[in-house]
Image (tube, rainbow, N blue to C red; front, side):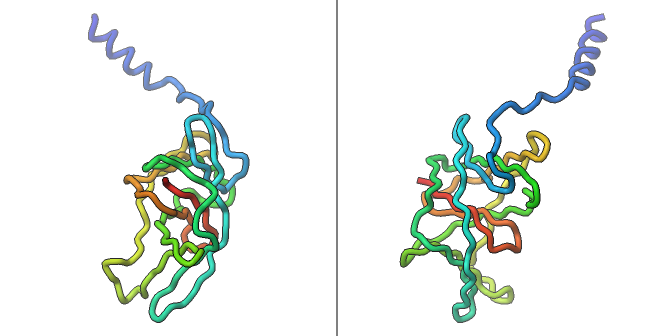
Length: 160
């Protein structure tokens, strides 16, 4: 009889509705927000300028540091999707030099060891159109950008 009761409770637990998300919500859709406990910090939105350099292509943003900062080496973002799919977001480390932040890509046919690669992200839906995005690795101190694939729109932040 105990086995049947245990089996019944396990089956009943699987039928229970998922818990409703009650945490903070982003003020603006399609803008990633850094999650700090129960506070949200809006990432710095900008447009990256494309520059051709010899064989490489650089994407450059003015300013050496971002106004959005986090001490967390594995940042968590909340993202309310309206027009931008969270699965299309990519994370890149930027290099600060000469008062600007940039990421440089070699031509597709010339792969190099120092080529910029996106940092892996995990995307999890937490409510209708609300997503939790996490970096899958520890980030070094420095400047970073989240960008929708194929877009020059960037959302900047700094890990310190």
